[in-house]
Image (cartoon, rainbow, N blue to C red):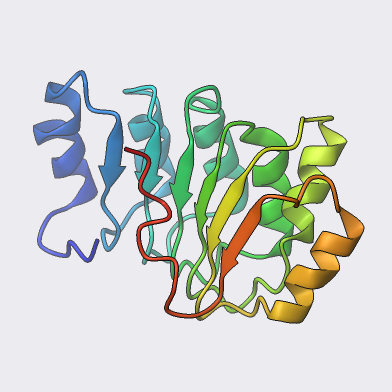
Length: 174
């Protein structure tokens, strides 16, 4: 994260497109745009993507891009994308990303609940699965996590939501 000295198009052209076995890309801090994320998602069956710290992504095109990797994506990181990440986006992602078990939404002040994630999954009749969430500096509170667990008790039985400095490494899939 925090890569500010390379453009996303250069990253795609110089690295991603030339490394066919690449499964994870953690490139937060770049000026990702909707067309570039769409192109990126079409290159590999990604297991993990980190695309945070950008103000140029919008919900509809992001969903469309991520649908290309929905069958493989297990971890999505969108920290400090404050114009993008909110409760509505969580519903869209929950409904469309059936294999995600790690979610990083730190620093998104417009996000105050994980209920949308589970509502989205319920609307797609997905089976319960574990989910680890990093939510420090978001507006998610302990009370909102408890409310989500009351609304979706079976689905959230293995939910881990870190609201403070704990949880370092929970998103590592290896």
